[in-house]
Length: 217
Image (cartoon, rainbow, N blue to C red; front, side):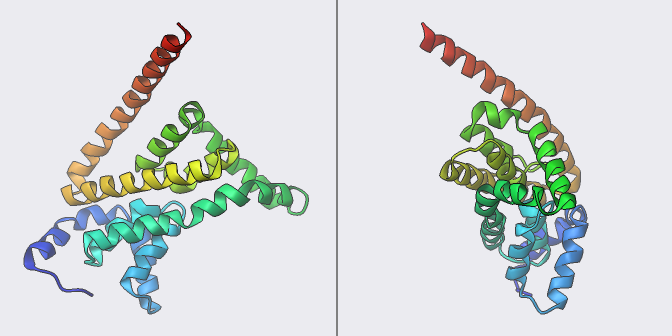
């Protein structure tokens, strides 16, 4: 474990309560560390996993007392690892499984249906919608869901990858902020972000209508 100045250590101790919210990630991190994984590899691996992703990896990185820049970079890179594969191969895999494994096919059908219910803003705003969807670090959003939706909507590969990447970077900055302000204030911030995200889509729809009406004149 790395050594830092006392102010950095105090900051890490101050976010202890926030890290309890990532208990599954923390347990998995302890398992990997017990298996001999270095701390940096633990953070990277956690960020690649669904559900945990970047929003779970960054708090664990703080608990491991890694530098915030290192934690954020590893989490962003790790969270992006599955994205190209999901965009390119998820639908072909679903087609293949439909004729070979009914149980896996039903699971993917449920996954697609769940993703489609969240796809409205992305279908409406394409690149911008996908980027903002990934950027808001709420349960049910993130790079995994964003990549699945991009695959379902047949968004062009590089457009989908770049939107996911920009969204993941923004999510990393937001999660860093939430971890540093502590659990109580993070809950309040999340509620405000949830309200703001709903308002954001309304503003974007209004601007889109204005632009469409202007171009039709």
